[in-house]
Image (cartoon, rainbow, N blue to C red; front, side, top):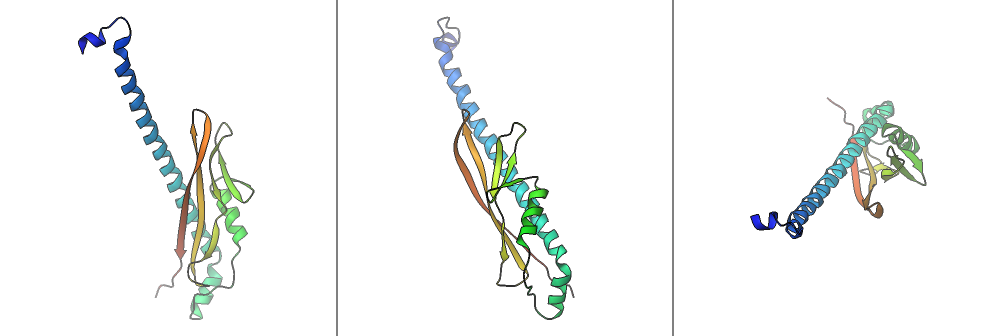
Length: 160
């Protein structure tokens, strides 16, 4: 091994170079995974907060429904929820998608407009479904978009 490391012809540096490249590739994959998990957890937490504020905005109607003995609500403004999500996550809206741009103008991630529905038909258990798309870039070229479907649910109950 010492003979390979002291080789003056450059032949002994092949193995350390390969090991360095493999370690760099593994480190790159781990960092990409960490970045994806951070994006997913951040969007999930922010959309949960927006969904809770959406419920709080409609809390008077919801409370009156619960007092009447049911937890039904007539309708909700989905456009308000999408605009709140866009402003909470600092996203730009275009073509039924919300985009997050980096400092250089590249797309960090995008997500479909959240589809807010009742978890149980017309009951006060709201569900927001959306898909986060993270671009996978290798050597400066866009390879594909990693798509992660996310569903967030929230409900409001009357405390006795």
